[in-house]
Amino acid sequence: MAIRPQEPREYYLGDRSFLVHIPTAYRPSLPHALVVSFHGYKANDVRQELITGFSAAGLTLNGRGIVAVYPNGQFGPGKNGNESIRAWQGAPYSPIAFTQQMVQLLSDNLCLDSDRFYASGKSNGGGFTNLLACTPATAQLFAASAPVSTALYAGANPADCNPGRSVPIINFHGLADRIIPFDGQAADSQSRTEYATPNITQYREAWADRNGCADLPPDAGPSLGVFASVSHPYTQTTVKTSNCSEKSRDAVVSGFTVDNLGHFWPSTLGLDSGGVPAPFNATEDGILPFFDAHAFGSA
Image (tube, rainbow, N blue to C red; front, top):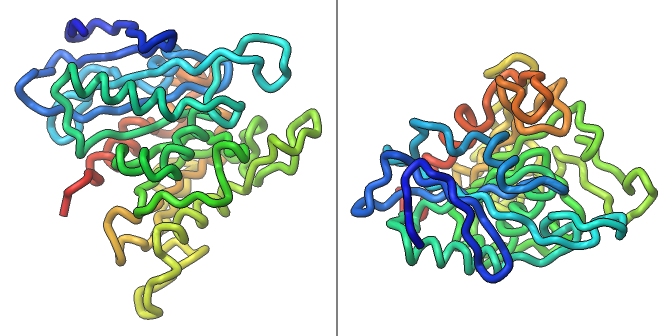
């Protein structure tokens, strides 16, 4: 694999492709963090790079430039069965093995910090990010996860989710999301129950429970269903963070709820919403600081 800094390149693993961004500051003798970002339904790697900004100049994790990777979903019939659509599991496709093989290929060819592999995604890609966090093998691969405007269909949000460890989760969702409603839905617009999605608050609480909040002693403070920290760092934005860190620093669940945000990746430039800005940048203001605080082997 030839590596050229600041030149996004498309690579293939069999018939599957992924876009790789190597930062200008990449040094082959120093381990760099890896962020894998999964696109939404019908989207692709180029669009995911654009809306997330993980390839922006100057961004760092652990003081070093970030290797950002944007895989393309698998072509298939899509939800309506009448067109070829790129999507991730939950749509339904099964790309977990591809993800593991891709990360291994990157690790074999780049100097990466295996304690700082992170997963993120939007919508259907956010649902797949959640599935990776639920799956023991990939929960041990990615140190923390950031699902955004998350499409939590049953295939991406299994009832038996059991990662085998506490997984740091940071989640973003808009109250004006009409594609994946914040309050959940019993079926999609065509009355298909297989595309039901949960209430986002309950989804976050389930992760807090899974991470051990319900096991805290009574004097540790609020537990399941109650988030110990509530703040409003940006206009029309409420951030609730679980108190799971009383048990383990890797058990944190942080949820950003944005009043007027639709089905978008929050950005002050409106990169994902036709130019309509959000009150903050999810990537720089939320995800990267969260990732920086959570690595395998950190105290």
